Amino acid sequence: MSRDHLIALLEAYLVTFLWSSSYVLVKMGLGQIPPFTLVSLRYVVASAFLIPIALSRGKMSLISDHRTLTKMVFLGLSGYTIAQGLQCLGLYYLPAVSVTFILNFTPVIVLILGVLFLKDNPGPLQLTGMAIVMAGAYLYFNAPLASDSPLGILITLVSGLGWASYLVSTRLLFREGEVGPLELTASSMGMGTLVLVLSALALEGFPRVPPSGWAIIAWLGVVNTALAFFLWNHALQRLKAFEISVLQNTMLVQIAILAWLFLGEQLTVMKLATMTMVFIGALIAQLRR
Image (cartoon, rainbow, N blue to C red; front, side, top):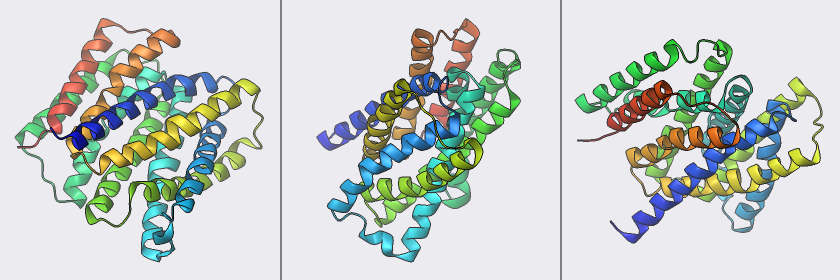
């Protein structure tokens, strides 16, 4: 393994930990701040931190191109407005463990989108992995989530679809060599943040945030969003699709442990067993011959 490859793996793993901690921080913040207000302020802080850096380094020049701008708008809507906005709303309705469990299906959605748009047909291992994921989902949802909100489950599934679309589109752009990670992160985040802010104002009005809420927003914005998304896209340039997706799947275990430690969410033997099934299934689904 080369030094560059190892650094990329460590970057991606650090991001998974930061994003896992975001679930706990967002869940705490939702006790003080409405969901769309929380997520929009988080991304306003992140954009205000990241865009000036990109501009100062001359990394926003390609955005003047109409074709590239259209792609950035799509990435902003799918990866931020839909994926992150609805994920926060899902946390409003569901426990953190349930949200991350549902989002663990994202690699399977990525696989399906890859077949449709990248002509990447699945092999026997991938189909086997998808079957294991579906079996784990049936066992997990059959009883433990019976009392959870069906609306929250649907919202979280749509969030996962948005994130899968973002991943596939980003990989395609990097493969074509059209944009770099800093330019892509700053521009697409800015586009998505604009829609998030307008949605928050329309649905929840002008924000009223207590001081403790601003502390959560500041940390989420600068560290868990601006820094994390840049590192993620930087690693995405150098890692294979299945490698970075496998690392993202480790969030299922990380969030379950963090939610148990800091939010008091229960972990039953059945939940642990079915989460393991989904993790192994998603891993197998991402293997290549």
